[in-house]
Length: 101
Image (tube, rainbow, N blue to C red):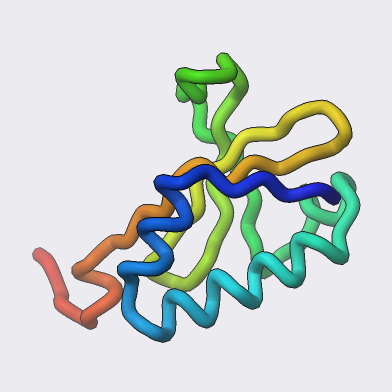
């Protein structure tokens, strides 16, 4: 699978803490080894459609990929197949072990 990385994703990874940077690098290596059917069924990546969410610049459906238990990559798919890593979102409460009510 071909991978395209948007600047927002790259910037978010580079500014994240070391465990998230390492997990993102591991995820990238794994993505390079997978084809599209393997991506859909991979249990660790938990590739999920984000219903009613569209990537503004391409008009493509957005998906979520697990980077860590607290971080998700927002992606879209292009023909080829190409996965585009659009942005990275970190749930800070989970990242730092804070418990909400």
